[in-house]
Every structure is written in C-alpha cells, then in structure tokens.
Amino acid sequence: LIEVTMHNHRKPRILFTTQLKKKRLAVLHSTGFSIENIPFINFEYVIPAMWISQLPDETDAWIFTSKKAVKALNPVIDDLEIPKHIFAVGSKTAEGLEALGLKVTVPDEFNAVSLVQKMNELKLKHMTHFCGNLKATDISKLLGDDKNLSSIEVYRTKYAPHKLDVSKYEGIVFMSPSAVESFSEKNVIDGATQVFCIGPTTEEAALEAGIKGCVTPEYSTLDSLMESIQTHFN
Image (cartoon, helix red, strand yellow):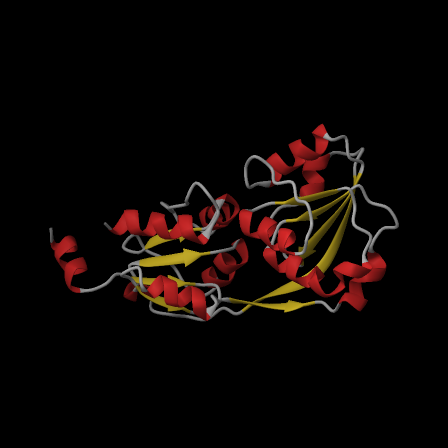
C-alpha cells in the first residue's frame, strides 16, 4: 500500500543508460514517468575509407545486427555491390535498411541463433557482418566450419563509466550489453531498483554482472520496452 501511495505522489524515476534522441525523450516524458538519460557508452563511426578495402570480392549475404552499422553504410551504399541476401536482426535495423531501398530478410526471432538457421536454410557459404568493435554475439561460432564470415568493423563503442546514486531510481534501463558492462564497472544495483533490458543478449550481460530479476519485453523495441515498464509500475 505504501508503494502505491508513493507512486501516486511521485512519478517513478527511470534512468536510461544509453543516449536517446531528444524527440524520443520527449515522447518518453509524456508516459507519466520521470525519465533521465545518462549515457554510459559513446559511439564513433569508422570512416568508410578505413574499412571499404576489407570487403570481400564476393559475398552471398550482408548481416546487420545494429542500427549503427546501417547508419555507417549510408554514405557509401551507392558505391557498393549489393548481394542477393541482406539479413537484419531487429525491426529498427530492418527499417533502416529498407529506408535505403534494400530488400531485407528478418529472422523469425530477433537473435543470432534464428539468423543462422535462416542462412543455413538458404545454404549460404560466404557472409559479411557489418558490426561494431564490441559484437554482442559471435555469429562465426554458430555458423560452423564450412561457412566463411567476414566481420567488418564500421563503428566503435567506448565505455564511459561513472558512479551515481542508484537508490534515486525506481527503474534502470539497459539498451545494450556494453551499457550493462560500463555501468557495472562503478555501480551495484540492489533489489529495490527494477532493471529493464531491451533484449535477451542485454539480459544475459545483466545476469553475468550479477543483476537479477530483469524485465525484458517479448520484442526488442523501445515501444515494447516502455509497455513493459508501464505494466510493471501500474
């Protein structure tokens, strides 16, 4: 009863640990929560001249597991030879590719295992994965020895760890495994603060960092995540 009364008087404070766009923050503020945004990771793009020469001469498929990788390709997409197959893990990643006029295949589930199943069905031999320096999942381990995977690093994630008063927040949100790792370098979460994760790989990282009882939505989108947050606090 005390908890409900407290929530009636004060909006639950939710901390997002990855940088969000101003437009997104404005939408989140209208959901009845007190939203704070303190990034624990920063991104920088690798200039195309640094990675374009690493591209294999021939590839059966491109793989994208993040929106950042799509954005990195944006300036040079017209100079590249588009393969027959393009795979995207995550709906936002797929939307970004479709906005570039590319036809995209999305695995049944938003994870690497489902992605590899799809590629095996098509009997693909050589794939090119556009990724960051901190890949959440090593796809090559799942692919098997008869497959050839080129990982092309098109952006970099840098940790920005700092200490904060965790007890000020009713909820803390992680949007990537690297945000969990950076946050955990200087902070510990006790049972009073609820943790929300965007997807299963992020939840895995949270468990490894000793964070239990995470809430993870069925779909790895910010909208689904906000629904989970609303359900939890209502």
